Image 1 (spheres, helix red, strand yellow):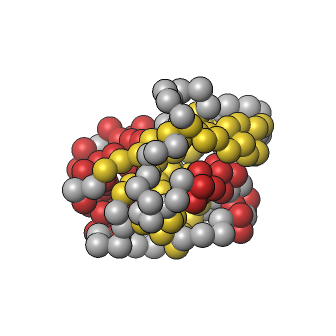
Image 2: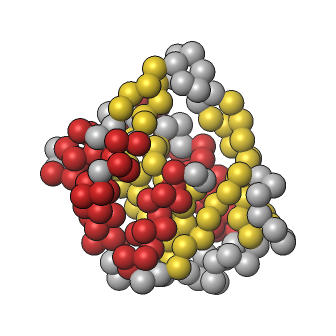
Image 3: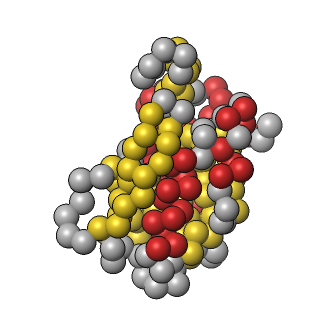
Length: 174
């Protein structure tokens, strides 16, 4: 493992049976509470994609926590991809399946400049449904999903196989 993946691994807490029985929730609160570790993570992601992207997008809610500071570190804008019904104006939506249910995400129709190279950030790559839906929104908006960045990949769920665009990086794979 790399130094940054060791750092992330040391600050993730497993919470069994949340939000439903049989699910092991990856709690990133200890990572967020450690300012030095959080800063190192943001700097690591920003360095990896510097000069390769035009805008950063994050999936609600934990993708916001990591995506916005990465965008700031790169001097770029940030686009929130939200749960359905949370954004004003014209929006486009995409439904997807989770390992424990279904959901829908949306983005404002004019959120991405045409042809923009987008870095999509989320906390965990599980089944890939959220990431695939977010990529669909980016592409339907006229932008390109250049890369996807995850803090944790749950490899046993094979979510990476559902992602059809952009380079994929997971800092920690379990």
